Amino acid sequence: MQPDTISTGKNILIIDDEYLSTFIFEKLIKKVVNDTEITICLNGKYAIEKLLEIKNHDANQLPNYIFLDITMPVMNGWEFLEQYTRLDIDPLGKCKIYILTSSLYRYDMMKSASFNIVKDYIVKPLDFDKLKKVFVEDVN
Image 1 (tube, rainbow, N blue to C red):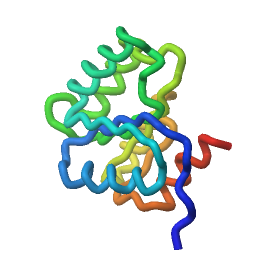
Image 2 (tube, one colour):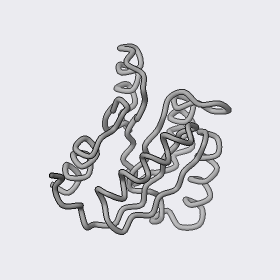
Image 3 (cartoon, rainbow, N blue to C red):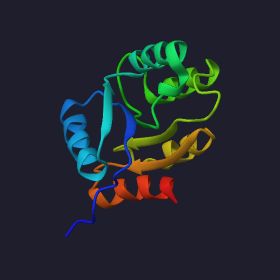
Image 4 (cartoon, one colour):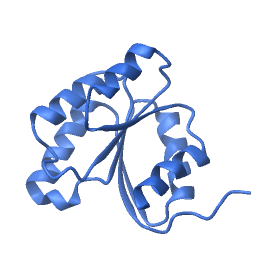
């Protein structure tokens, strides 16, 4: 039996080029968190453009959470993190960034830890309990 969903609304950005993964992840998020606004970007470049647009319009509307895949075309997750940091997209530190990847490489795990803006490294597949832990830790 799954625990109750978290009732606090969240603004979430998923950056991943795999359509099936994002579809499943979006459904899972909606089971864990009520009143959620989810945006999906298929690569890091589009996500940077979207975030800059939000920042320039109203920085308070930046997402609460960013779930970032590493391997994507156009701009991968590492390039995204470098641009995100360089452009100072979130000077107030509102966004919590989680790497969400299928990579089990120790190098990738260590590299993610070198970015102080990355909260955690989560290996796919993501399940209800792992995702709920992300949101519950934020509430506590």
